Image (tube, rainbow, N blue to C red):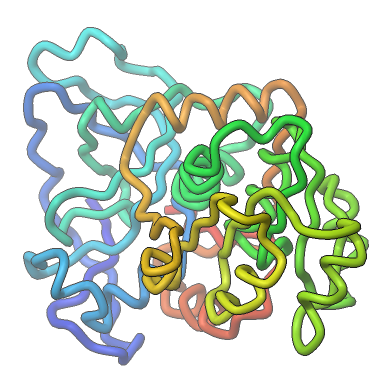
Length: 306
């Protein structure tokens, strides 16, 4: 099969190359997925630069990519959940950094796999699991949201935009930080936008007529503002700032979980969760996709289509 690989940790994106490799081995309770689309996430190029080496060992050459949507090409021993030809999606992170999704085929534990929503294209389904799963896990950690006011830091970002939609679908009132150019976008997701930066806490408290019930941080560097607007004892989470744990909050690290991914699919099929695609790239242009992601000004998801 054709796959994108790198042979060592490096920030040099030109080290990425397309090679012919053997198909992945298919373990029991796993499925072999023929990749139709694989979402790009900032973690992909951060891992390539060695950013997670303290947490996860790498086995080189590494195939990057943790998001996938595609067709089941084969099933492992004792895997009755799926059949060849099923359309599926998954957050396909493994315990080691190795056989990722920027390839023609990838083997994924069945526990991480969910059926592809009929309402989503391959590109949309391939872009949803990691970012959507991160948003879902963060909001679940806040508890019951119906009837509550939630502040989301970074409401126009890849994870934050999913969080806004999920929180709204849960019955919450959502105030979301975003640059002015993204305010209409946030409103379209169901949130109430507010400009970030100096004076944020005062603006949020004015909008909320006091404090907010819960806060989800998807950008980092906003803990003082969170604590200034959060109701006493209210829950708060962050995916970027571990310091929240020292102030009664929770630091979130998303897990591969097919049940959670299926919840995202159900929201999509109900018309309550949409996935915006900014651009698609072939395997030969993964470096370009990483550069676009590093630029930090993309609204919507970047996707690799083998």
